[in-house]
Image (cartoon, rainbow, N blue to C red):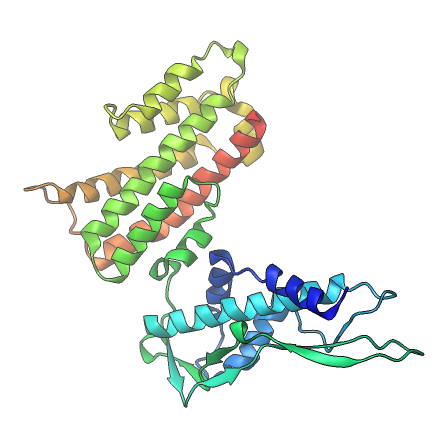
Length: 324
């Protein structure tokens, strides 16, 4: 592999996903003291936590496998970019404050063709497209020093905490919109979008459970899925249908046994869903919720929502696996 080929390989491999940025945010929000912190030290700690460290040199010689150091270099650069995006996002959000002027970090990797007993050449690659700036120091903002933020203050962290990676993208987007509204103190829109995600979760769970019922059970899967998909059927009816099905151990006992979640736990999620539906109905003219959609109430709905959605999508995941 030539030096040009190796550099091109690194460039091709550096990919930053929203998941990478979310992991970096989670790392930063778990710092144990208020600071000041050196972002460059934190950047290397995060990269090491993810399993990547910048090699001293990449040896380009037929006798040496270049794959491990190439993977480390590209992974390290991806971690740096994710970390940079995360830290500036948290600063913009007001979670961290900056101290001093930003400092530049230049992406650079040394390489050599020299191996013991043989000559060669050594040089380095520069990657200006990956060069970034980080604050000189960061400290935790005063308003966060006594109460760390819940995941519901950040859309990506909330989705990560809820563990709903197997949810429909529309449901994930609704949850992110709900968190954005909550962060800006728009409580009615927040419960509305959280309610949309809740409805979608019940429908997805019901369809997955129906598909796992054995054919000889006398259960009409198609009819059940049609009810779940029918826009004219209210969500309360759909939730009850899912609850009734989950209570039939003769049909889906294998799912209940594998996930370890009892029908009673599903009843608790129904209670949360009912409160959320009642809160969401405040979007209709003249309708007032029993308890005002205040910060405290909506915060509890979000905290319980992360836990309940995680349970629902755990059941769904197991049902999908057993039905495939």
